[in-house]
Length: 342
Image (tube, rainbow, N blue to C red; front, side, top):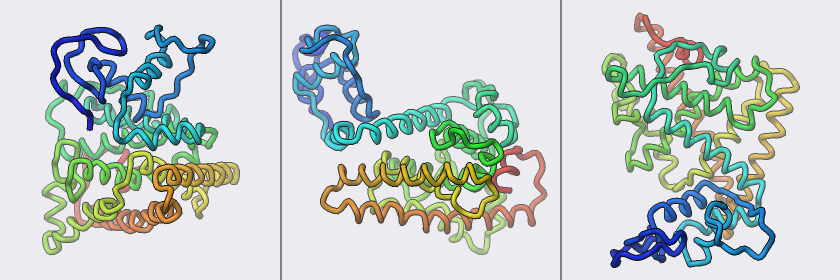
């Protein structure tokens, strides 16, 4: 929370432009406030090319602007952990910065755009999703539950394809790994989103029920089962008070861990996944040490323990998909549904 109170019009202590509020304990304008906030939460690291000492005068230099924000006393309550990670574990901070940037892009695409195309998983893998044309949501008719599920799947696949743990992995292995992990990643992301909205179950971006009416009718004798499926992982995450950094790291860990299983991928891809699994596990341990120094090992174990609940939740989704295939005549559904779950 920022300390924000009205003042008589004055100048921003950072850029000297007009400012009428206190932001983060300082007289600062809204652009400088948001610049400092983004620098902290996105794990940005800046280097000034000028020789020391820093003058803080060149506000076109990102480093000078950030350091001046610090010099005048800007402070947010939750900056301690990110600053500590940047200071002690630069490579972990860089990993988090890239994951957060990818997730921000995924979220913005999901919120504002849509695609009318109908790609297969293989087509997405071949171009990392860059071959798909998207349009603004306001230019298309109202999206159905099926549309939202498809686009959530698409944006999740693009997020995973462009993550560093996919580098140098063969396309065939990418397809297999995505079939195994896309729904699991969607469950983690949507459960975190539900918690951020103070909900007890997963919903679609516009608040719709995940399961449309025709699917709920299939389970009319056991409606509590569908409620269990949409709330299972949320109930696991709520008491953990999981941070976005922890969420993104366990997504990477669980994804790479699947590469060490019995999936039919090449030995080269399997070894890459094993190496990266170890790397992300170490990154998570270092993050836990910064965020929870007194019980970091317990915290680390609790986060890895999410995998068991995630697997149970995934198996429930598989059961629902199997029931749909047996009981319903599926026509006109997107190809990604066939490739990922149906």
